[in-house]
Length: 76
Image 1 (tube, rainbow, N blue to C red):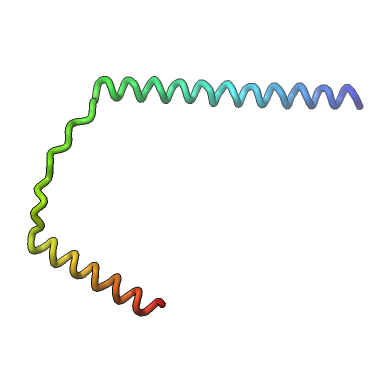
Image 2 (image 1 turned 180 degrees about the vertical axis):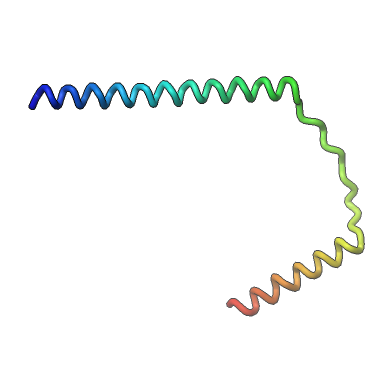
């Protein structure tokens, strides 16, 4: 029985070690890929968008506001 338990513990440690090594290699690989992507494809600066809201946008905002108000009224 003792031999069976020691074999089970050895197998447990080997399995956990393999999983740990795989996850560690995965973290390293993801960090390397991230560094490569950021080096060769840097983020472009975002252009400042105008703060003027068009009439279509105002209508959409009004429709959404009315729908939320109606939903909240119906589901108190």
